[in-house]
Length: 376
Image (cartoon, rainbow, N blue to C red; front, side):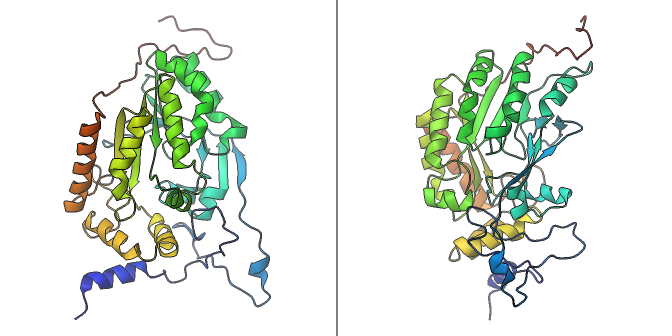
């Protein structure tokens, strides 16, 4: 008799009916997603097909388009109990790093784009973010709390080299002595060490570098346009030497793919100067379920079934559970094992002996144009 569990796995890994035809490898070279499948909001399903005239072969490679966006507001708030921040700024929409596991991919559906290749090739730059930030910080009812820079997009993705929006945001926060925490997997953050070091001296800045793997080949496949693992470790080192508190995030941990590296990543990060650490287990919300499967089947066909099987065992037999407290850790024996290994490694290395809290008492509201300083 056939094993029901194996039947479930094979069914889940089968391509969805009407799924988009995958662009050939040459067209998507350097990209993470293997397709541009339709989003949950599309009334119909887009599908590429060969019309007999070999028109698919003549299509250009996917290129990155960075478009200007004039945002109406810039500080986003949340009340999620399992997040370490309650307000954040995202200078960009979409992310050229192309990380196939990115939980933010489904957000591109709100813009009418695919969470697949569109997410990493159609980037929106919030060009008025620094000006909006000054306006929002100047409001009389504003209460200073740490702002997370880069919650659903990397603030130091390639577009930052030319746009410099994240740097201009930091300049505003520096002038107003406002605390900021940054999450990135880009070595480009070292360009702003001058600002971050000044802020760190006043207890106003901290940085978390995400290191998913030390395997360059796996990194190139999984996060194709992000900095290489050695570059990220070098960024940890340079930030630490400049007196900027640095944490390492082993995120996401993917069972049967990179979970064997937990200890080695933490050791390398500690040696580079990181003194805090955190982890998140792979999350597969909405369209990300199929996008991640496509990548697994293409790049790791021999591991695909096992990865999904273990992941589902950590979420009560489902791909993903969105419940607070569970969505980032999972449940069950395998999840417990990951948590125990992480805690033991941190204890052995001396990580997380401190819990740095940034200062808010130094905040000085900016003076709005044409306005006057607060009396109190």
